Image (cartoon, rainbow, N blue to C red; front, top):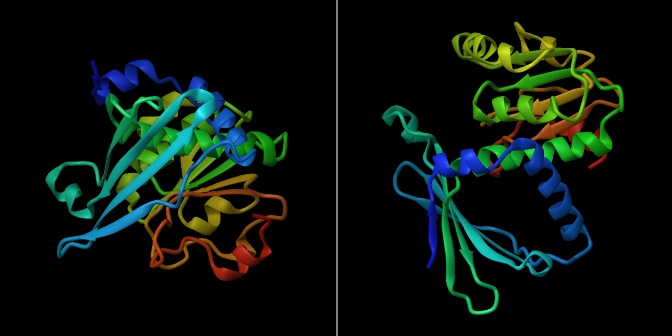
Length: 242
């Protein structure tokens, strides 16, 4: 019989340390071409121009087959709801029968940060200790939690366009890290000489400039996922190793 897992169930079962290791394994399988994962299909919905994405994948080595259904409704924030919601549908790879329906909101939040942590583990400087967070939403929170597990962070600077949001972020998260966590007065101040930079915004114009970023910095750019969004200027993208 198929099972139904709520967000509370997922939070009780999924732990960040385990998720980082699982994502490392999944990325390895994907790079070895052992995963079938076509480009996601995205539909625009309604007058508010919301998004509905379908993201199927198959990983035979794990007996995994399914899809994630994700929606992005910016108008949800006015209703006290998350802007990003998701449902994962898991199928039996032998029969195609439904195995489980899993609330995917928290998985989306945590998995994104876990993948960034894997990239930091393998690509950032081994002694990287200064983290800049551009954005103060759920992705900033999950990235601090995840990256703190793979590097010995000493200094964390956070900046977002809303001073109230970034101050609230500092108050909420300072108990969750041993690093010195503080709000920056500008994006430039936050990223100056940072070893790791997380871009987690919905910006449509660049919030970080090429000449602000130190040589050797590792950038996790996760916010701009649509053609009309940009977090980095073109010069920084051109300068980077991708």
